[in-house]
Length: 158
Image 1 (cartoon, helix red, strand yellow):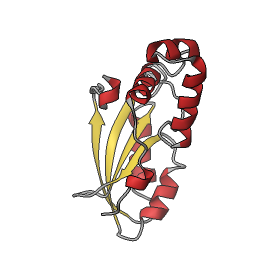
Image 2 (cartoon, one colour):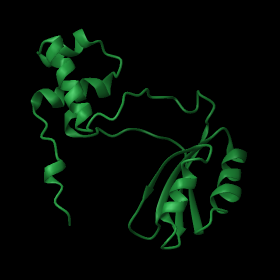
Image 3 (cartoon, helix red, strand yellow):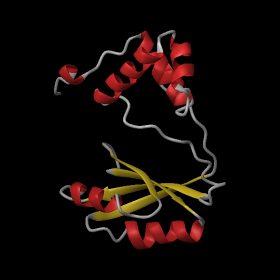
C-alpha cells in the first residue's frame, strides 16, 4: 500500500470547526463563521483558502430535495464489468443523464451507480437502454431506494 502521508493535511481544532460549520451551512457569512470558530475574519479567509489549496475543501454545495425537484425515483445499480473497461465506462457514466454518483468497488460487483430519475419509466430507460448497453458491462443489479437518511458523518460534523 502506498504511503500517502506526504499528501495528508493535518486538521487542527480550528480547521475541524470551520469544516463543521461549512458542512452545516455552506452559505454562512465569513463574520458568523469567524465568530463560531473564535478567530478573526481575516484568519477565517486564510484558513478556508488553505483548506481549498490542500484539496480538503473541493467546493461549496447545496442539499436538494430530489423528490421535490422532480426526481422521485432513485436506485443504486451495481455493474459487473470486463476487467479492462473501467476507464471507458467511467468516461461514459460522466455523460449519462440522471447519474448522480458512481464508484469503483472491490467485491461481487465492480461499479455502483446512483441514479435519480423523474419516474420509474425514466429509471427503467437508464438501466435497460443506457447502462446495460455500455461497452464492457456484463451484468447489472438494481436496488430501488424507498427512503433515505443521513448518518452522523465524520467526527468534525458532530
